Length: 351
Image (tube, rainbow, N blue to C red; front, top):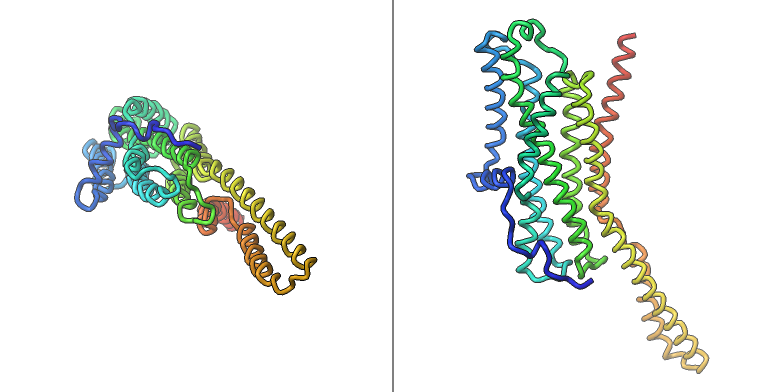
């Protein structure tokens, strides 16, 4: 497929607010990984500070919903920063398979790690609406305090809920753009070699770990933060969406290169079979001519070609190393198995 200068080789577009923040943090000492736990601490202290100062909670007492809820937004930000690093390394590993000039790689990398502006306000509006809905639908953990201090409770809870639910659509947009670019670079690359597994597997780690981010959030919500989900339809719908997206992130972006690898494998198989047929015809011709000593060269060549055919037949067409597939499936199923086993055991103990 001819390669033409398209969006990823154009001048970079302005970065959106989340991408600018993640890039700013990355420029801090130690890549700013200490910032994300710092945000957790700020949200934790804000929520509890309001509850303590207003007398809703005794000083030093911990509210469980705030304690587990403060992790969502900062974790999502940290996950985006981590996936950006994985994407940059994946592009570097895949680049030889593109057949494109090295000068174009920087623009492709920029696109992978940068979401353009225009999405921030929509994510914020989504976060406000869903945070309010989740708060209203949450089971009351402090019923007496809610009756006495209704105006103070949202001030404590909503910043944590707002950041968590605002980051959900921001993460969706960022991941959707990254995974679309994975499918696109696979589609447009013109030097993919099925025998060179390094570039072929380059993006499998990115897609698997992007999927795991959504699964971690979903399973964290169902286990550590399970009390908040009881009867909370808004929150449960978000969890279901996260699980579906987690699986889709792993499978969908790499489906296109699976087709390309399958077509390339079929082409290689047709070519080697044609060569074996020609070698066989040459062998018969020399035998019929009584040139028995001359058949040794053909025999050796035929043996080497048959060996090549066996190697081609073993070429995988799925762009995932086996350990990545098994790891993702384990991460997907293990929490479900543990949850079901614990439910069965608890029901038996209860009986």
